[in-house]
Length: 68
Image 1 (cartoon, one colour):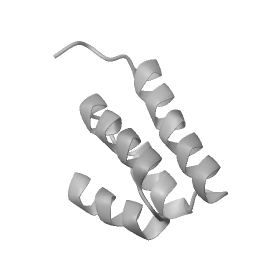
Image 2 (spheres, rainbow, N blue to C red):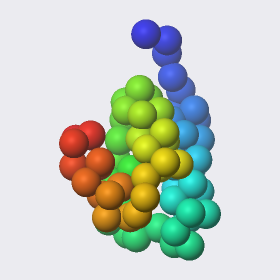
Image 3 (cartoon, rainbow, N blue to C red):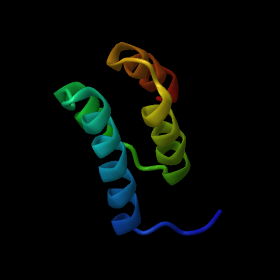
C-alpha cells in the first residue's frame, strides 16, 4: 500500500465533507466528527464514493456504521 501523507488524508476528508455539504446543504456534526477521526486512506476513499451516491443523510450514517 502506498504511503499517504497527513495532507493527503486531510484533502480526502475535505472532499467527503464538501460532497455531503453540496448534496444535503449541510454537514451534521456527528458525521463531520466521524470523518475527521478516520485515519485509513482506503476507508476515506470508500466513504467518498458512498458520499456522492447515497440517497440521504440517514443512509450515509448507516454506511458510516459499517465503515467503523
